Image (cartoon, rainbow, N blue to C red; front, side, top):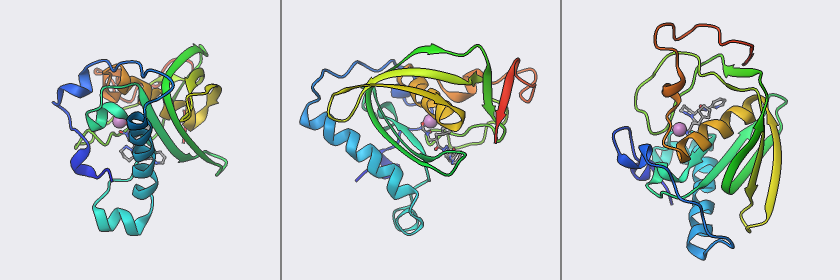
Length: 183
Ligand SMILES: O=CN(O)C[C@@H](CC1CCCC1)C(=O)N1NCCC[C@H]1C(=O)Nc1ccccn1
Ligand code: NI
């Protein structure tokens, strides 16, 4: 079971190195790792389990955060309409995106960052993603709103990018150009 001990923090090299493509069909080991990443998110959102195991709640997780330098991400979140979305994907790739930007009005945090870094994180408002699902089958997703932001945060981790790399240093809360806020 993944707990906070397994999550590497800022300064760990795994967070700044690009992750490798996962050979498909996925090995039993990669399949298990991805399942465990999704389990972490679900456990972390269960108040009893989060309390019992000291889990910081997460809606997304990327393999480099558990020191696995492979292109695997898990997402488990409600969207703005209250619909549950669960994804466990290999080799996600943003194949196109809107000119329009968006950002979380609350700013962003990260399970690998034990401090708050204030500021808006400008991201693409809508993205098209190609990936392989947990069984290795190709999927194509068109994402907007919170889901689009979560996917971009996770795919950034696969490229050694942290959310605060995007924050305007001079003016962290400057209104990003052509951007719609996501509450
Ligand atoms: O790489 C993956 N991570 O670092 C876990 C992050 C991923 C999210 C950060 C912003 C977009 C994706 C995560 O889930 N968090 N970051 C730390 C604070 C708690 C939690 C969070 O933002 N929760 C949340 C946000 C909006 C709505 C509901 N819940
Ligand atoms: Ni993160």
